[in-house]
Amino acid sequence: MIKRITIVRRLSTFPIVTRIQDVFMQGQYNKRLLHGHGGDAASASARCLAIARKDRPRLSYYRRLCKINSPLIQNVRHFNCTTLVCAESNIHPGEIRTSMFAWQIHNYGKDNLNLVEKLVPVITKPKELLIKVYASSINPIDLRMQGGYGAVLLNKGRRCSSGDEFPLILGRDCSGVVVDVGKGVMGIKKGDEVWAAVSQIKPGCHAQYVLINEDEVSKKPESLTHVQAASLPYVISTVWSALYAIARFRPKKESIGKSVLIHGGSGGVGSFAIQLVKAWNGKVSTTCSTSAVDMVKKLGANHVYDYKQSDFQNSLLKAGGFDLILDTIGGPTEDLSMELLKSGSQLISLVSPFMADMDRYGAVVGSLSASTTMFKKAMAVSRKGGKYRWAFATPNAVALETIAQLVDEGKIRPVIDRVFTFKQIPEAFEKLEKGHARGKIVIDMGEEKITPTSSDFYMNAANN
Ligand SMILES: NC(=O)c1ccc[n+]([C@@H]2O[C@H](COP(=O)([O-])OP(=O)(O)OC[C@H]3O[C@@H](n4cnc5c(N)ncnc54)[C@H](OP(=O)(O)O)[C@@H]3O)[C@@H](O)[C@H]2O)c1
Image (cartoon, rainbow, N blue to C red; front, top):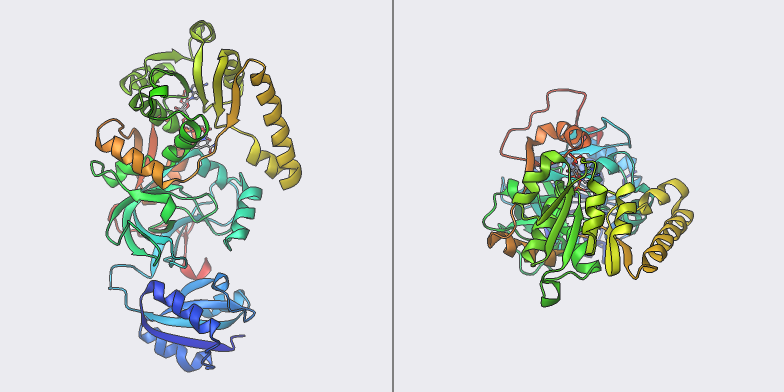
């Protein structure tokens, strides 16, 4: 039951939070009953930031930004809240809408994407930005997370940042416009066109608005449209982590002429990695299927190995001597890569069993099992004088900034397989699942009016 209400008037989004925090911290509760003031606030289209659980005055307990209406009251009951704080917003009409559409899942499995109308998230931390998403993309991680991949590890992260597992919005990257900034954000302001990759523990970009941390975002390349830009941030985070951070392949003298083998050159990651290595003056060899040979050559690959050909393995073994191998395929491709290593070379794999082992065996046994696998492989490679490591996508503003410059210099271009509209996201997932990607699948949020047509995939805000 709600015992306390505080109404704070005429504040913008960020001050709402700080002001409400102050209110709690100073214990300035206006003890009023909901039915006494809910009507007022609702008619003044007040925004309402609920809600402290168990009367504990902590920011992390604010569960929802809601309008004062009956669904809110249900939410309040649902979360067992005892305190309600609401505030009018002076946000310019049309600048930030109070509700948005998002695709989200409420359980793991297949065909579980629901288009819902829900409240636009609010900035609650000084380093956060609110982005209106103009375009987003789909990555294999979205398909996997849809089925529950990584839930054990990601839930640990979510618990630390007071996030929920469900409902879960997928979509790890986007391009859009900043509509609100936290007080501590430097260098990016309202109205800036940005691109971003968002951490896997946070609500994603398959929504009209998304909250992003300052260290996950940079200004987008000026030469790209939002649809083009959205194809890159997640693959940038992945390839940067693998090549720059782990393999220490960098735009420096020592990298010039290094021989880099990229497996899966036709996919989202591979098509970007080929271009980055070329931009940093490496020599690129890549593997792909027959139908993608021309495409990867156009991206700059010096040598192409068609894995559909019978002499594939022999040609690679004959070529051998790679300084660095980026494996985006795993399994037999990894076994072959181990044979291709020479003394001093590195094999970086993007296909690790780390998250899957934790899902299967739990956090402790799973991480032990993955560490054992890693140790065995690293030992096998080190016997040849090489290094074996796993790499993981890590959102990184510096990487985005650096690549934006390379894009504007014409050294890297987006490779887009197909563009879907926001309403077609389930079809976009199906397309990625069928495999054989040629670059990226992008979602154009456009200015289309989103009118859900089927109760199968439409859920009203009151239910989410
Ligand atoms: N560790 C991380 O944080 C991280 C981050 C990003 C991605 N990844 C992983 O990296 C992998 C690639 O990601 P992506 O976004 O590039 O996927 P993608 O866009 O689906 O591309 C995969 C590409 O590999 C090609 N391919 C399939 N089998 C191949 C083989 N045996 N040899 C060479 N090419 C082959 C596919 O085309 P054809 O089937 O037509 O040949 C396709 O073009 C995925 O498994 C993903 O989960 C990991």
